[in-house]
Amino acid sequence: MEDRIYTDHGLTGTNRARPGLDQALAAVRDGDTLVVPKLDRLARSVHDARAIADQLQGKGVKLALGATVHDPTDPMGKMFFNILATFAEFESDLIRMRTREGMANARAKGKLRGKQPKLSEKQQKELARMYATGDYSISDLAELFAVSRPTIYRTLHRTGAKVSP
Image 1 (cartoon, rainbow, N blue to C red):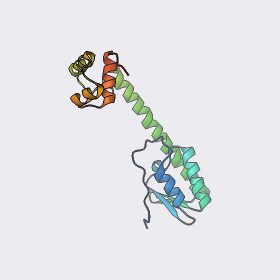
Image 2: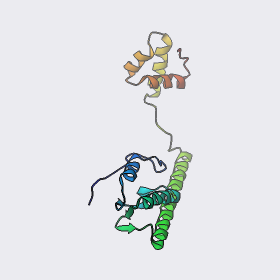
Image 3: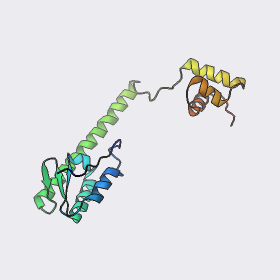
Image 4: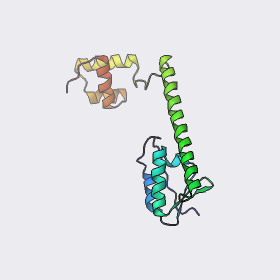
C-alpha cells in the first residue's frame, strides 16, 4: 500500500544531496519496504547503492526495485543487487560520455555557442552610446531596454565601455 511518496525534482544525476531520498530513508522503519521504480532512481553509483542498501538493511527495511523485492540478507539477492547497481552506473557513465562527445562535436561545428545575448548587436551599440553620453543611469537603461541591471553591466563590459561604480 502506498502510504507516502517521496520525490526529488530538478536534481542532476551526480547530486547525492537529495532531500526526497533523505526524507524517505528517515521515514522507513523495521519491517517496511522502500519501493523504487528502478535502481538508477535510487543511487548514482555502485558505492552509493551499496551504502543505501546497507543503511536499509541496518534498519530492517526491504527494498523493492520495480516488482522485485531485494532481500539484503540473502547472498543471491545481495549479488543481484550489486550487479544491477554496476549496470546502472555503467549506463550513467555511457550517457555522460555520449553527451560530452555530442557537445564537443557540436562545438567543433559551431552549433553550440551557449546562451545568446538578450540584446541585438545594434541594441548593444546604442546602449553603449547612450551610457557614454552620461545622460542615462544603469537603472534608466535597464528600464528602457526592458532587461535587468546585470544584463546592462554585462553588455557594457562586452562592448568595452568603462563603467563607473
